Amino acid sequence: MSSQPAPGPRPPSAYLELTSVSNARVRTLVNLRRRRQRDQLGLMLVEGFEELSLALTAGAVPTSLYVCPELVRDAGNLTTIETVAALGTEIVQVSTRVFERIAYRESPDGWLAVVPTVPTDLAALKLGPSPLTLVCESVEKPGNLGAMLRTADAVGADAVIAATPITDWGNPNVVRASKGTVFAVPVAAADSADVLSWAKAGGLRVVAATPDTDTLFTDIDFTGPTAIAVGSEKHGLTDTVLASADARVRIPMAGLANSLNVATSAAIILYEAIRQRRAHSSDVCVS
Image (cartoon, rainbow, N blue to C red; front, top):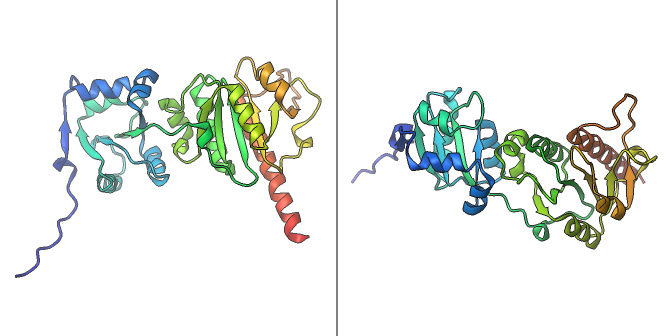
């Protein structure tokens, strides 16, 4: 008996199709833009092929993937459907009208995934021997949190922690601004007091960014275990964090403004920390 050839990949049309905007699935997807729904279901949205690709590379496994072939800009990317389906993910092909309803971005590219929310347990974070972490206290704008995640990913930071968080890590705009790195960088969320206790217990030196100090950020040693703390866009760090910090640093300002955007400030200090660590590592190797 001759063997049968292995079946080829299924075309998108072989999957479940969704064409009605009144379908209950559509309402559920729209509601996942709300934090309460995300918390209740333990799910979050990832829109955009680039963000989805990074999430998959980081190990995220979507529960469902909604694709609109008419909006997909690169037909070659459609092979990703089979890759995701092999993970056990439900694949749903949707009409342009439906996708425009479930999309939260302007100019959608036809890719929207539902994935389990990222773990945010502070106690579960696993850090290296000389960790570099970023603590973001009460940062309000999802775009700033996402931008800080991208920087943390770029420098290889061990974790980003939301202290007394206002925005959750599953916010669609955090995912978008982070380009999906919310799945690549370990994150956590906890009250500021708990974050400080965790840092102290772990031997991390807390360095607080504030304009109210004479110490420049370049004058601090970042080569040891460090938690860099930045505050909210309007008020900066709370007195609780400032009082508990091991050091306070500022970024020199030559203009009229006394501070930078919080994501910019975090990036400048993180890269200084990485510069010092690389220089220190080179010195150790030479010696």
